[in-house]
Image (cartoon, rainbow over all chains, first blue to last red; front, top):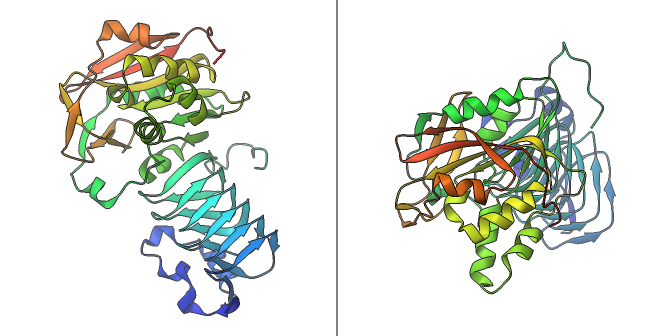
Length: 150
Length: 207
């Protein structure tokens, strides 16, 4: 099957072993509002940009921008993305060559390889993750004026 | 960019008080945003630590990629390889460079072009943190340094296999790190010395 809707058993997000890596409750709430998510299978290759309004799991190969700012994007272990990724929560277990933008959180799992810059309020990096790039750190300090948007 | 494998984490990390780290962090007390270059592998603990500061952290695990290339292409000119592996744009300016124990694994003929290349993105006052070992043998791979808090770090060897250490002498460092001056140094019990260098001049930025 090329594209399919998958239920909870296809969701690496729910199999996270470290509680600290879980998306914040608001992210979970939105991401789980619909338990369905699109899966790009390991044998699929897409050249072009992707946008939509549901969660996405990439196990195949995408060359292009992924833009799902209100939904989670998971690049699975066999997934490869060449292009920028925008998501509410972005979780990478496979390989990404591009910048990652997370509205709420970005998680780099120990199996991932990422070459690109990261921008998100929360970034979790597991030891073993291969990462080359920059991370913008802007600690939440309410007393200070808001910095320019990333 | 090499992956830290499970076997790299078998040896227990050794925690120690780091006066060098403490001195380094004194540079981060103003409110402006800092740009930090970490030349070691990406580690979650360090990312977590720096997330408490207003900064941009650039991670470039230089050594693993560099050594893999020099092993596979022994005749390749070191300078061009270093240039290729450190491709930051001209707008980049680092306030802090974390070299960890990298220099223990590089000969003088490698440190000089590396430091010259890095100076391209340094400005007056850029600080460089390095650990120089005086031991005759060191682990085959650079160790993993994790920052625990403002004064404590852990050092974790990734293997029991050893190799000869370059053992750079203090008097040589001034020559090897052209443009930098030693701000302070602290001798550790394990035979390493923590150095904090400060970039003071801007010559030879043509690489």
